[in-house]
Image (cartoon, rainbow, N blue to C red):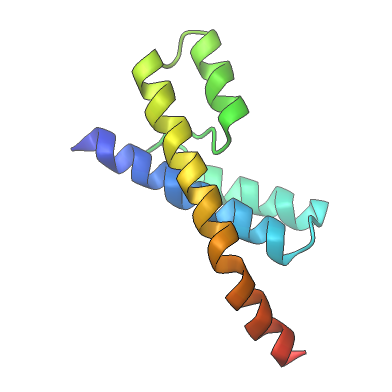
Length: 98
């Protein structure tokens, strides 16, 4: 049960980071705040990598098994795809407000 929750937290954290990236046009100050907030809230429950490169680095230093790496990267990729697919309607709605 805990492993499923870990990957769900990884999914939601990655989703929040990708949304903030898309909605703020990669503003570095906001991205730093979002990374800090997501890692602070979810860092204990998940591995806290929130991107595939971080997951590979954890695997290379021995903090993650190969199976965990695969599930971790899969949850991150699904989150990235979900954010990009659902981004256009959100951006259209926000564009209507301004």
